[in-house]
Length: 408
Image: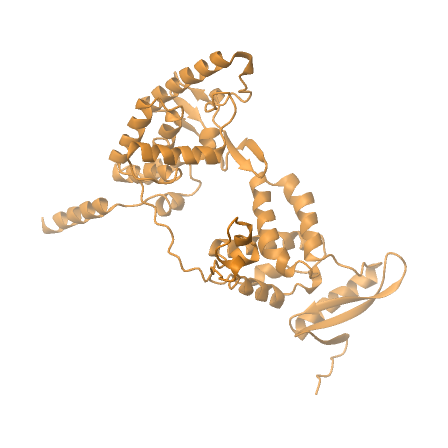
């Protein structure tokens, strides 16, 4: 037997495993229509009904609310793109397009209740993204999902988190614009991904490997020798190295201020501000770095002289191709790996050169606060937890010192 409605509860009824109700309102066009509200429980639906009824008393009310699809499009174009960093826009756009809109894009914002949002996010765990995105079908010779042999490329934990963050950010603006009463994404937990692959363990170079790599690059007159020195010695990120200009370098005083970074954002190569204020601090340059940059300056001047009027270094970048144009970041990553192979050292990612710097600083006994300044972190825990990787030798030495202290 259906539960009797309480006084003032309005027309609340079960609707597809949730509850729905409506309020008679006057539309901006002067028509009298029903405005529907929803809730996971009768109580939630009743509260939404009370808000809708109060809104109806104030004046005309729009009865149609946008879908997740249409509001996301508006949010990306009118709110995110004009106000956020380009990479933030790309991040939100990618997660919306791949993980949100294909599943809940057709739902109206008012029907996106907690239960629906939770079922969507939990359901993503069991989605093979190779199948969902048609990755295998795009290959010249399909080898798994497109021929009926699912490769089980489940949604990763980082993409589950990214989808949740994106939906929550979008709904925050929907709340601000009074299209919905609350941000349902903030009320759900992120499930654990099915992908059980172990997190890649970073194995930075030893001081000997770093020296071998840089020495080989110097002997080969590598145009990016100074870039590799900055990555290993100064712990600069790839974007900071490629965005470095001669304007922020004082080679006589031995100082550097990393102001900008060069990044590929979609079809654009952007020269933009660094990610944190700490990244803009002045850093002293050791002699090896100053020497490497002077070598680079001579190389670039020779390239400019050979090219004459065709030289194109408008941004005054330190690292340019022989034509004066910026380097493509992905190409520099490949050149780093190629140099690893040519020099005979273990191949690591270019970003792991930064890990190498941090690890060697720890090995040298540098105080964490000083390491934090060199690495330009905003929080000390990033220095301690992310970039400090004690080696077996460091652990062994520490235990030997502990044993010596005890048995003395």
